[in-house]
Length: 384
Image (cartoon, rainbow, N blue to C red):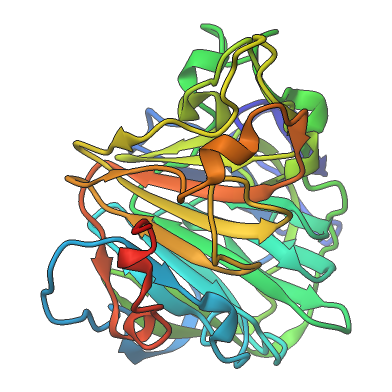
């Protein structure tokens, strides 16, 4: 979220001498986007962040795609995916294109290393679990319903509490930001926005680690995963300031926009990415026109694919989906409520559903892993 923040100790002026108690210099790092014309932060390290002692390639990051099949409605029983690995190696990529990759992960093992995505921003939606998100910018606690927004190039790891953990992962090829229409010319969220700066949680605790040893940072870059070993702890930052840092927004703080008649999906938009949007369907009152039909009308995604991740509640326009399901309604095909759902919605006062929607403006590709948990009957579930 681009507003100014600072933590720890920093010098009075940037790009000037900033010395430790022993007289040696802290190492200044400018971390920014779009060359030097995007948002940035300046971090002060105990060690030069370039001191790499070993480099190796771990694996190809790109998932395997299914063989090309007929364009159709898809329902992925993602709750049946295996619980495995850590936050990174346990990810199962399900839907991908040039702009975004959508994955699910139910980690069972702690991260024994650090991770950095150098290809774009990430969002982790916390479906289950609590813990601490630790990064070079400091620490934040997380809980169910949190969107953890992680800028490109951020070195981080999760410290998970005991109990089940489940995350919807959105990997972007660029920046993920609040929608522009909710911000004024200075970037401040305006009165008609469904959330504001008070709802944003930013790093508040900066612990500086002065440990020697062998510390591995795994970096996703150019479609592969590489490992870099450092002889010092990567969280050696004594202070930083700027506009670029991870932040958290909880879906419970999203204030739904309602009206007399059914509102279109853009009112649910929460974030913007390159050629895609992320929306939040939260508990809300239904439309209040005396003849309103609360269920959504049938609509054609002429130039976008629609993905819904069902978090919890009663999904008023769908039959057969359950918590943890993912549906894909691709471009070129009209879609809408299942049989009987329109009539059943009339007269209802509200809904308790909670879901995350991702609309992409370029077609998504289905992975082989997704194919393994597909419900083959979903395509025909609108038949009477």
